[in-house]
Length: 101
Ligand SMILES: [Zn+2]
Image (cartoon, rainbow, N blue to C red; front, side, top):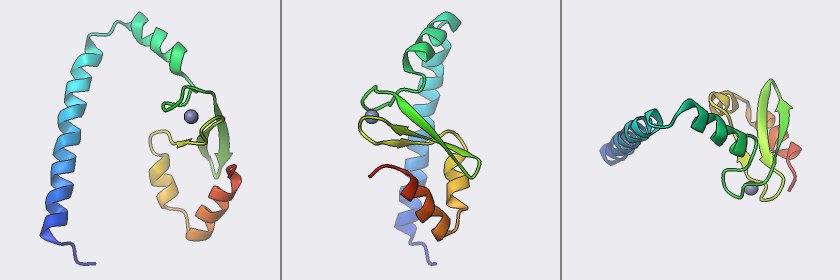
């Protein structure tokens, strides 16, 4: 596959923007106390980041995928997107058929 220079540029700037925002947030996170972090986790753990309702965890091929009980958004933990990308197309089709339509 031939990658155009503009695509590489776009990828580069997206990565730079991500790194800039990540650094800013990491600085902000240092200012939150451990108690504050624990309180935030208690409030948000297994809650949908979009609508705030409970997430339902499904295990498929050793991946734990969370689906929102309300808006049906699907959320992945660190590393799970890489694991999904390694599935064959039939594996992916089976994976998506598990979730409610
Ligand atoms: Zn939701």
